[in-house]
Length: 309
Ligand SMILES: Nc1ncnc2c1ncn2[C@@H]1O[C@H](COP(=O)(O)OP(=O)(O)OP(=O)(O)O)[C@@H](O)[C@H]1O
Image 1 (tube, rainbow, N blue to C red):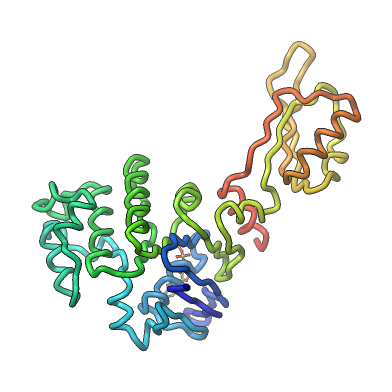
Image 2: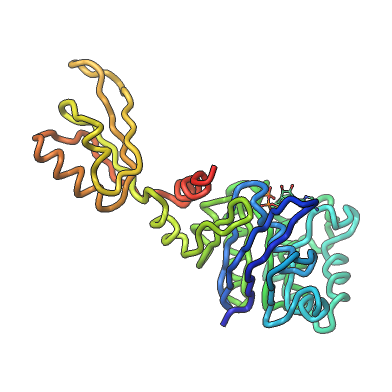
């Protein structure tokens, strides 16, 4: 069942459209990612879901409710991560948890939440003295204190070191495993690939891909990268005409005894791999240091968001 439904969402600021007909639905129990370059309209979209912005047109539903018209009920269902500047530096972790619990009619037990999120030892620490990772734990705790069905996390791991980022990913997985649906806005492809069940890639206010991370990679022009050093010269135009080829790039690498080696890098699909290998066999050329790797979500993202540039 879809717990969040966004249909034909549009929003303009001062006559400039920044969200231009966005459609997606988030199923209960998913980690759903919203990806996109800076200024793509991600935050505006999730703020419409949270009821913090009023759409110009289109519909947004959270568990069947309108986040603007039914704001109070939606606030009880939906936990949103706070921005750092919204907490006072002098507030302790315990005070913050107690304060935010008081906003809800049926808050969850904050002590259990603190234990689950590894905050018990820092209950007496002031917000201003917490490390980046501890602050993020606290933001997750505050988003969960109202016992929500859905939690919205916007750029949660920005600024964290790789260790804290991985710890935060584990926490997000635990939140989902406890039955909460997660809507995650992120710039990090690795994060989306690792955590999200499905992602919507937004570019210039429109959804350019909506699929599982693996599906998005497969949908991009090149899902496979093939590289090798041919044993004798090979016509790049012949390679460019093979099925599924998105690009062929030749570069001169370290020179051996017989002069410079040309390394060829071909972006294509699974089909391209077979075609390249048969072409090489026909010309009796061997492929030195042959590598075939799957493109990452990073490459797919660049591909998808470059198409309209
Ligand atoms: N209140 C506002 N008034 C005017 N313009 C705004 C307002 N909020 C956002 N914008 C503009 O709308 C566009 C989309 O912003 P938004 O924050 O939704 O994008 P984003 O995808 O979340 O970007 P980022 O990844 O940089 O946070 C940007 O060009 C931004 O400058």
